[in-house]
Length: 382
Image (cartoon, rainbow, N blue to C red; front, side):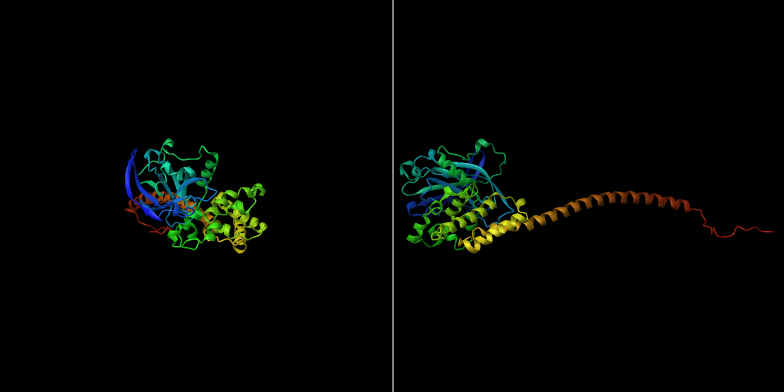
């Protein structure tokens, strides 16, 4: 993959941006199912631009900005104002720009949106892919800005005029892509599935390419799924796009085994997607642990990309208990501080009273002779 990059700064409406330009040459020769930029650093943070996989069932061209730093699954956030731009090389006024302010964290490491229809992108007369080259830019704000930027300044896309594309873009932008971003920071065998073939230093065989074209719909009868299982489908489709090995591992399995394997994986993904940290009580942890153990032992899936997040969720119960302990101790510290402050006040008052009384005692002792009150008074006869 040939890349041409540049870094510059620009001012627009009083906001300072730093720009990373990703020039993709020989686009037709790239593995567009696993295409991402090299990591770049802006204002001390590492980022990547990622192309949503252009598989046979994807009829849109979408881009993501991803956090590329090696960060834990929780305990951090990054509030960022940025723009992604698909440059029109024939008419700059027709460049497609998506501008937004997003809060990245362990659950949401990337943000993406629909840009143009796939057919429009590949039509060289439209200006987005010229001489087999496309140009993508990420503009990341590097100046301080108010978190209350007017809504009309943010060009976030929640729907498109084409209902199908709108649904796809909305699902993509809302999906938690923890597995995608975790992979970019770990050099495991699974990473070679998610990175472009050139960056992995290897290429797929013809048979592998053919099998990776399979989709979840080719393996399962999605129409026959119940209401509960149907809710897992968007999450499973997303996971299969980023991790083709999920599909490949089940090609030769029986119909019922495929259904069990993907339903079980869907349950895990759905639980992680919809649960909050506070929901991970003992029952929830036991349920997740049981599902995960069965998946790892019997499904045949390669799930190293998901394991850190499952373990993080399973550890949440202990973290919640520790948090409760810490909060109780914090409350005790506050109560004792109040009590000490009150006692210090009482002590200061007692010391002042003591000093006054002591001085009064010194004055009273002047000219005073102590007597033994047990001595008989007696009298004299002479």
